[in-house]
Image (cartoon, rainbow, N blue to C red; front, side, top):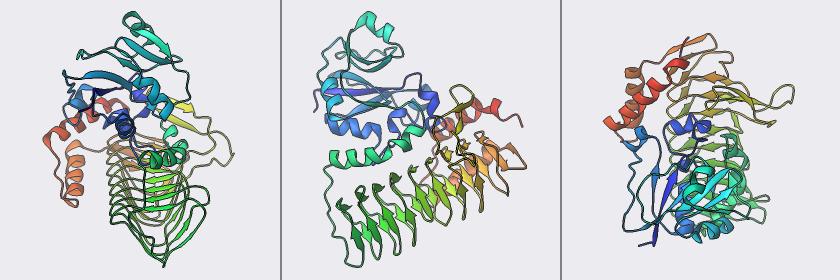
Length: 403
């Protein structure tokens, strides 16, 4: 057993990652091959628990500190690297690690009380403050997920010590000095792999079908499928159990989502259990080539990201019909359902149903019925606790659905 337990905490930036964090803690955001939680657990060889929103704790996030272990609280937004891990692991009881105004981590012995870790000045009353001296990435908004994704694929494969367990078939063509890493049960036939700029990882029991072209760094996670003739550009992660086709660049798909047909997705983040209909296309560049503005839940307003490229952000269980067009920097909330011609609004509230002609509320009973039908295809059932979580999100976002 490890000498300490990690306790992840979500700070005041949590809302900036909605709609993705309506259904998960910040530490379970996937950047690269792994989630932030998985990165820390591998580095520190330690288990973890999470202090987050109460409604999530009733579902997947029960707060379960082990009183027999020392506790290191870690900010869910902090992405570990070897230098930062050394600083965190060196913390003694009663010490806190700070970077700027952000609390990165603190050591509280085996005290299982909850701490207000929102503010540095609060911690300084009870902790000796140590200023971090190393480079580290602390994410601030959703776009950090795709802008950091390529570097994190490289870092994660090194952390995982990923080695090919299956030989790349001679029917494939590879060029470039970085490896194609096939995990156990991974399949690829008659594909082109360009590893000039980074590695390509094909996870356990994942499949890249014939005619596909991948340009690294790319991660195809466990059980995912890349459909025939797909074109996947660098800095892209396809999460566990996803099915993707068409053209994808610099995007992150979370688990069990489908974009199985032609269409373009770029500089985007797609949550879990989403489905994008055939020929769905996302604009990721304004006609003016200017900086993209995106809706931010934290301020309930649109803000300038400072980025020239920004596509779609889609919350869990969102769906869109065939030939859907998304404007640059669109945000689609949890359980939103989009269809029809033309461009829908750039912010599509959670539990909305409609398109460019307008939206109505997606009735809660209908939304959960849809999820049950989707789950059945993967031999999964919608639990009553998850229904409670979804109802909380439905009620919390009701004010945004004043159509």
